[in-house]
Length: 451
Image (cartoon, rainbow, N blue to C red; front, side, top):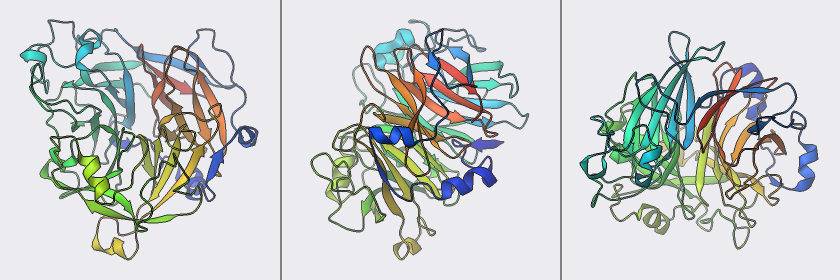
């Protein structure tokens, strides 16, 4: 099985060289930069009113909310984070999250009163399964026909994003910290691990050692086995989980928070003043966290008191070729978003990292809402540019997929003309197809063109 954690290695000769030098100079995003980004050309209006794309690009709707799936359930709403892998038989597998809360039973995979799934993690009052979770799509790699589609994880709350692992699993993360009691039988706020293409609903147990907090996304470094996680809070931390045994996450490990070697650097948000400059690299250290199951939902606060760096709503994360990028949706003085870049130590997660620490860079900080606003999920295109989903809210949000070049220039790639956000952007490992979700009503889309 080939796993593509948003795939940065599918064409090393082309992509790795381009990405190795990404962001040598961090940049503020301004209106003037739009003309500097090379892009793919102006978008063409979509007659269907869903997605405007540049010349030469086209899309296909693969799956949408309410459709019957192969297992008899229906496609849930609120499609969010997603990853793509290649199965041994050559088919593409999309693992797709659904960000649904207890109050949204009618938007889940089961009709109300018909949702007592035996594999569900939690049920409302012992009856209907909570509607959050994940679903699986198996695709013909050439025609993109959906050959199978089924529910893979059920009974969870607001599964926002997640990440693929090198050992063939999908980490699905809850962006909710509800406690057991009332109609809920379980605490929430966990990471769940399910196999890629499980073929059925999986009875998944939370990986408690990875912490209980408002999870957003996760990415695994295949070299060290470390898993990095973001937290969608205005005062969030950036987490690292060092498993006791890579590939066996339920056997435990250490949860840590990123801190700067320079103790004067603690707040990366730059809301009141430019605490973290937009150029240069900053050595980091990692702080061990205790009481990681955090019944009081105070993990981030305790980590910050211990010196952990604070981030402005950590969201999408992407890793590969020795670097990790993650968005901070409301970072910067304009509160329109930042992209951070982390370069792990050659001795990441070992005693040797003290002498050769990992480093963090503020790669991009938006000052102009017209050209980059509330960046969320992100991936990399075959040409080496980042592709970032916007998450603007409101009745007419006007969300875009933005491209960010190797030298930090921003350009518009595609416009979501439907009144929703885009999410879950990822590429097939061969780079031919980009996948993304339109959030509500949920539609999973494949895009092909001259990437």
